[in-house]
Length: 130
Image (cartoon, rainbow, N blue to C red; front, side):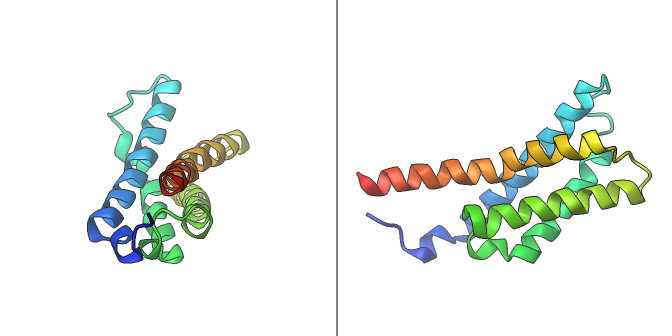
């Protein structure tokens, strides 16, 4: 049984997808702070802020609310804008953007922002096969 498109794009579903993206980006920042022996929550807004702002821009660029769970149509552009925009905003705010950090951030955010959508797509496909 397939779910009608209008049900998949419910306001609650859209907000849940956006909320999950924000939580995952924030968790990424907290883990990064902790891995550098910094208080994970004390400066979290400063660390996560550029990436959350870029994530919102990614949602706007990708028109993510039209297909919030789509891996390629939404996940990839949201991830790309989050990484590039986050790095630009970090640089503009005087935070570091070393090559190693860019590689790690891009990899982890790919796993988080695209990964959950891939898992959701696989679960939906499996359910529709049953």
